[in-house]
Length: 160
Image 1 (cartoon, one colour):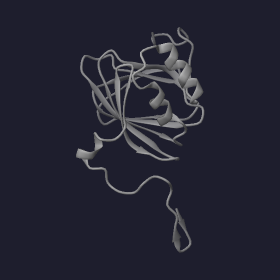
Image 2 (cartoon, one colour):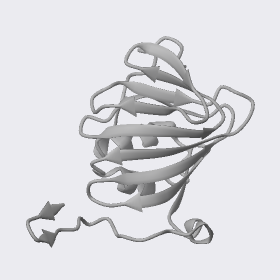
Image 3 (cartoon, one colour):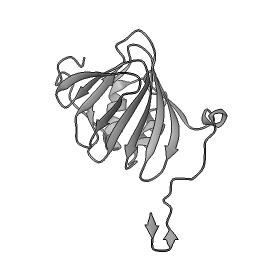
């Protein structure tokens, strides 16, 4: 932000994260997905995902965060506020706060994407709690404690 003659920086560190340094950053395994932290600050949180075939995140809502997905490889089947859509390499998916959404890799190849949310909220802390958990009920419980609300199973046709 520019404030008169002074530039005021936010808490997001400046600089370049080199490709050989990226794998040394925080990594989470969440129910078969691998997430790599790219940037964590109060106002912006970005992470890259590797989503093997058959994985997905069921319908949920971020009541306080806007979320974006930039698909790098593969195809995602997405639930966006009552409709099913697909996004492939180069597509960017915009999900404003409060929008019910889900994403799945229903293809037969890995999918990769860059996700980011704004503001960050407690999503990075949630991933810390979810790392290596295998119980979906505990994932839902922890998510609710970190401002991510999953819709009840069966409430979205085609999501199960």
